[in-house]
Length: 234
Image 1 (cartoon, one colour):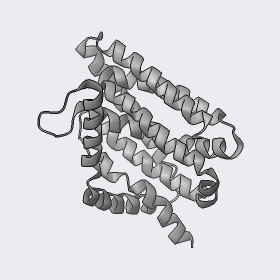
Image 2 (cartoon, rainbow, N blue to C red):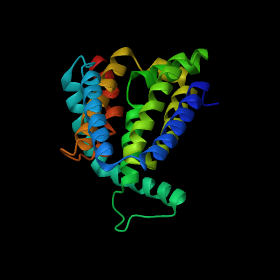
Image 3 (cartoon, one colour):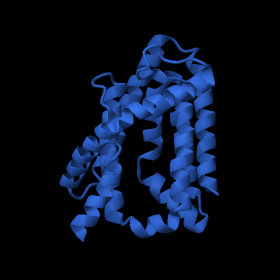
Image 4 (cartoon, rainbow, N blue to C red):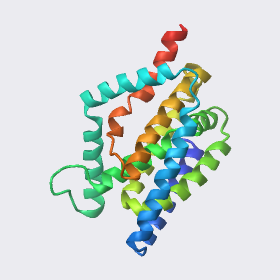
């Protein structure tokens, strides 16, 4: 069982995203643009807050550099785009004309990172798995529902695909709660959170149309950060 908290979170993302898609088509372009910029600014603020969790900025730097190299080698961004295209094709019957990144896959990646990066995801999932207390995830689910509404109104139905990411990621953490609580120390979670904050900053720059960064190729940094902590503390 993936956990009650995760199921609640998936439901709020789907409900909020569906309502956002319904409202988005009825909003003038200038309003959608302003909402997008507001979301971009908020994402930057969240990224700055999370990045300050680090106790050693060199760990974040090393994680991003090694993670970026690994991500480029594995072509993670390209694979996420392909997954987004398949989800889009299965739900709308449409494909991108050039096989490149689509608005759908961009929305899918952006929302997935937003909903899965942060201490509430890790701590809430572990708490749910170990004790059955899903209160922390319930709070997160409420926040994610409103965020899904806002993002879907501007980015479109790709945000709904993030419900699958939440189900898989949080569900895995809940099922492996015993292992995760033993393997992830507080310093590890702090550096993972800070590294995730930098990824949020990258997303914010893209939402503000300042610079589109291949954020997907930086995802391995989230795994490398706790490994560096384990090595340096060992």
